[in-house]
Length: 271
Image 1 (cartoon, rainbow, N blue to C red):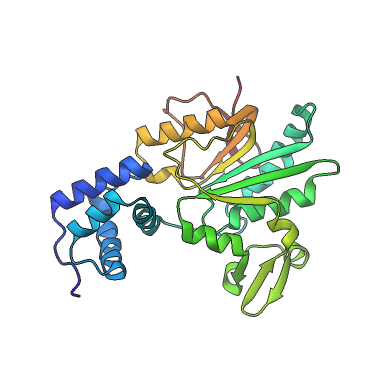
Image 2: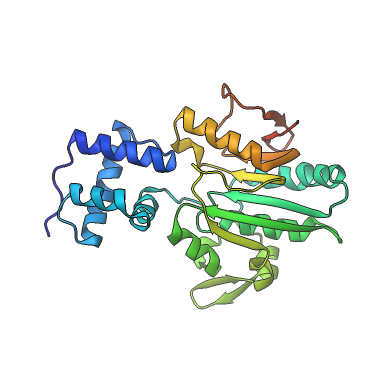
C-alpha cells in the first residue's frame, strides 16, 4: 500500500477536533506534520487505504481510538528527571505531610502521565529511603498510552535507560539482568498502574501529592484549567502538586497557591 500523500485542511480540522475532545491535546499548524506522520504509520499498521477510513474507524471503535491517541503522545522521561523536584519532595514536602496528617500514616500519591514508569519508580525508591516506620505510601501511576503502561508494569529498563540513578539506589532496588536492570518486586508492588485519560475525572480523592509534569504543555488554556481543577478535586487539603519546570499555573483560574523553596517551586492546595 502506498503512503498517504494527501492530508487536507479539512482532514486536519476533523482530527484536531477529535483529539482535543477525547484527550485535551491541541494540534496546531506548527505540529501538524507530527500528526500526519503518525497517521501514515497508523494506516500502514492497520492496512487502511485512506485517512477517511481511519477516521471512521477511530470515531466508532473505542479501542481503536485508544490506540490512535497512544500513537500521537510524546513519552520522553527518565529516572530522577528534574532532580530539584525530588530534593524538594525529600526535604520539604514529605516532612510537611508527616506533620500535617493526623490519624493516618499513609501518604497517597498520583503520578499522572507516568509514561514508561520512571517517575513513579523514582518516587517509590525515594519514599522507601526517607519514610520512617510506621509510615507507608501508595502510588497510582496512570497514562493514556497502553504501550507505555505495559513497559512500566514490566519494570525492566535497558542499560541506556538507567542514567541518573544513584549507584546506591541501583544496587538496592534493581537486579542486573541480560541487557539491563529489573526493579525489585517489593518496589513494583507499591505502585498501581492504570489507564487514564486526563480529560476525565480519575475518581481519586484525598491525595497528598500529585505529579503531572510535562503533560499539560500539550493542552490549550481551557484544557489545562480543566485538568488542574480536576486535580484540585482529587486532592486533600494542604496537599502538593508538581508540574513541569516549563509549565506554570500563572494567570490560570485555579485555587492552588504557589510555593517557593530553596530546592524547587510547586503548588499547594489550601481549603
